[in-house]
Each structure stands twice: as structure tokens, then as C-alpha cells.
Length: 132
Image (cartoon, rainbow, N blue to C red; front, side):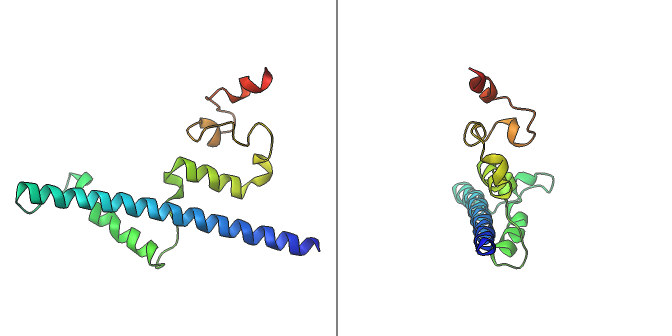
């Protein structure tokens, strides 16, 4: 009986990881589309084709789009979870559930708190609240 429960928990964790990966891909795709849309609008407003110097990497959204498209099509693995603090925190909770089950850690640290990257670097004051 226990092995079935463990198997279901493992499958659930895998599904949660996949959901977070897909959320991060969707966010990244939205950012890319927004950047490309801004470039198109600017070219229409200026009535000319966009020409940007190579050193101006802010306008080279198309190059990162190739990697994004490959990930969306399943040609390459991975997501962009680590680029989004809230998704990164959720992934840590999935990967280390026993650590995040404690009373203090469950939701007491906001995603921007340094505690999520280094458990000794809390800068949100959650530990002071617990002592009171």
C-alpha cells in the first residue's frame, strides 16, 4: 500500500514540475511577443524597417525566440522557471516538500526574500515575527 502512495506522490510532483515549466514557458512567450509587438509598432509609427546596431542587444528578441520556439515545440527541454521568483519558489516547494512544510516557512517569506536562495539570508523579518 505504501509503495502506491509513494508512486502517486512522485507522479504528482512530476506533474507539478511540468505545470511550473509550462507556466514559465508561457510567461517567456508573452514577453517575447510583447517585445516583437513593440518593435512592429515602432517600425509602423516611424514608417521604416527596423535597423538596430549589433551591439544593441535589447532589440534582438528574435534570437532568443529561436530557443523559446524550440522549447515550446519540445525540441529542447527546460523552461524558464528560475527567471520568475514566484515560480522558482513553487518549484522549490515541489522539490523539497518536507522543508517547506514547517509552520514558519510555509508562506511567511515573500518570493523576493533572500531566504529562498540562501536559508540563512532572510531579509523580510519572518523570523522576528515568529519569536514574538
